Image (cartoon, rainbow, N blue to C red):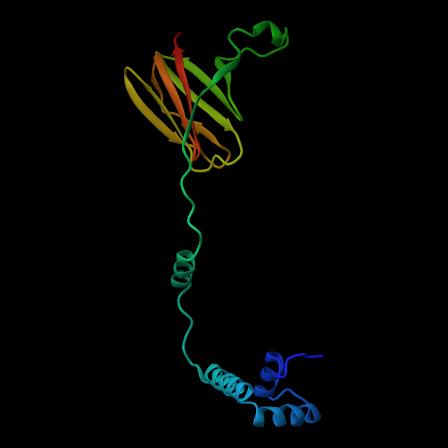
Length: 196
């Protein structure tokens, strides 16, 4: 039951769209005739509905709508970039007894580094005075990340793929520093030495 002396908005919409049954329609219209507030609301609703039914405008292009909606989205403030130094937790060069007699010999060296909630699996192969570095960043949300290696002979970088893997171009043997740059953290492995 409506405690207000005026007609409910939903009922006014039903009157404007001619959806009210005849008995209720007569009672509502009798009130509208004597109540200027309800009469004004009904007139405005009828005008809006008439405009909506006669509107022939086309929808705005999808990109324009997305841009307009984006204007009203809350803006996120950038967070401070954390810088972390990774610690070596596994090196296949010094772990050969752990593999046992049946393990396959490989010319790839595996190193596993850890930095807080991120692990970095590096695979290094030295061949013809050059080293090839591949690996994987083990962390959720590494999209848009990149890996950069730099040393006395220069620097190079590679983007992380969808599986957070990377392969750096071949470089001369020597001492390097490797950085993994993710949206919220930068991880450094400062003392990498690749030699025969």
